[in-house]
Image 1 (tube, one colour):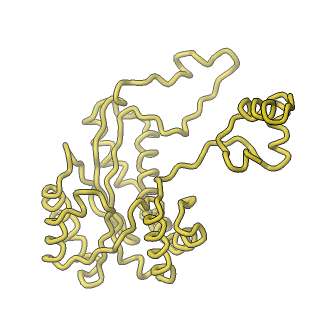
Image 2 (tube, helix red, strand yellow):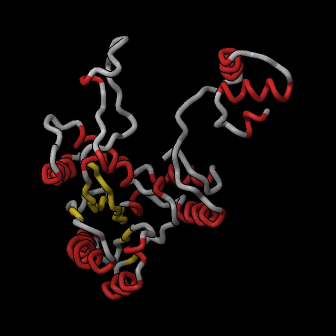
Length: 270
């Protein structure tokens, strides 16, 4: 069936193609009913980065090399990342209670603002036992600023907490992270890196921490209305995340490795 090859066809498009190809005239309702009979339901598509062959190969190799790592070994890693937070950005999960005919009432309508009202960039790092301070990144994060404002101020001191000889830094392949001066600096100060496969946000547990972080900001009893209030709310939300929740997320790393192996390097549910 063509629908098994192209899952993005709508019921209308399937009906039209059946009519053209086979001369069959059925209703959209019949199409949906037949899809349900073979357990095919219309759902929101999962999202993930585009993975070329080289990305899948690298992800699969990484997973195979780390699939037998223990929780103690993963506890040595500081998982880091940047995150952008918009003042008025929808998260895609928002729902509203309303009656018939209330769709466009002010109380049930999400009003959009140009550029989501502005945004801020933050950097953070988490490990099983603790986390770094949250860094508010004003303007663009360059390689020089990454060294001076992140690595020197937060990563180096944190490595002593875990134990400098045992410490592993995880950062992705963003341009400021892989710049030559950054590589030289990390080698100079003796920081070991976890060689991270490109396009692998599903392997980084901090992505789930960011999700908790954003939900805490949004669910605040007094949501921020200005960028300055957003900065303060971000700092408070970061500190309020229970460390046990962070630890539980990091303890999913063995399962993430298994998921990548099952997907042969492809995207996973994480």
